[in-house]
Structure formats: structure tokens, C-alpha cells
Amino acid sequence: MVERENMPEHLHLLSSDFYIQNSIVVAPQLIGCVIETNRQGVVTSGRITETEAYPSYDVASHAFGNKRTSRTEIQYSRGGKLYIYQIMGLYLMTSIVVGEEGNADVVFVRSIEPLEGIEEMRQRRRYVGDDETRVASGPGILSIALGITRGDNGVVVYDKGSEIRIYKDDRYVSEVGVGR
Image 1 (spheres, rainbow, N blue to C red):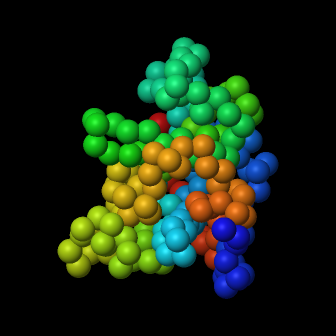
Image 2: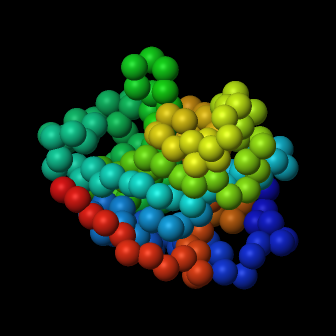
């Protein structure tokens, strides 16, 4: 896959260098960015509205205490790759590895505002409600809506040829709330 020909001028693929920062810095900067998937020519996208930073030193991090397992190994990669994992045997969570190789920092994407391919998202989720804000309003839900699977673990989000990419939106201006 290559970058779409009709990409709006206000959207710019985030560079690989962006993802080399730590999770505390990257998490709020991802708010307002657009995550896009392209599955067999079907494009879905949404504006990232909520994230969580998980530095490796946080006890809630899967890699806390330098824990290295087959599940967490991707977290030790150079930033810019997806970390997809399952919780409660049901839901796939979407996170982005950030920082230098060996760091194990991630940013968890909690919610998006659907922008493109909303009907496809509804079908994937089997959502019949009228409130479009609920189509991808939670962590496991956004993975379903965007068509993200376990096979996407390790996908590079700054590669023009990737099926999943993240763009900076030059038109997005808003204050970002940060909590600890």
C-alpha cells in the first residue's frame, strides 16, 4: 500500500523521529492526530481524543521491572511500532511504542473520534446506535472499529506503505488536558 493520492494537505505523516521521545511527551502530542487504517482499499480513520502514557518505570507498564516476555518484547523496539495486546481474553488494545530502542515506553490509545469510513466502523462493531461519538469511544472498541488485529503488532505507523498510519493535523487546535 502507498500513501493515498487524495491526502488532505493539512495532514502530514508523523516522522520516525517523533516517536523517539518518551511516552510522557508523546501522549499529549498525539491528541488531535489522525490514525488511519487501510484494509483492502477500505479506509477508516479517527482523531485521537484520549491517550495514556506508560513509561517503563510505571508499575502499570507491562515491561515494569525490565520484564521481557514474548508479549512485551515489541515494547523494547525503537519507537513508531504498534503494540497490540489482548486483555481479559476479549479485547485488543492499541498502543504505540515510543522512545529509543531498549526503553519499553508506550502510549496507549484510549479513544478516537471517527472521521472517515464511519459506516465500515459501524459494521465492524455491529453498532446500530445514532451517536457517532460512541462508534470508537473506548480502547477495545476503537481496535474493532479500525479493523486492527493481533497481526498488526509491530506495524510501523510512520511508513507511507503501512496499512496503519498516524498523521499530524495542522488544522487541529485545542487545549489538551493532562492528568497524572
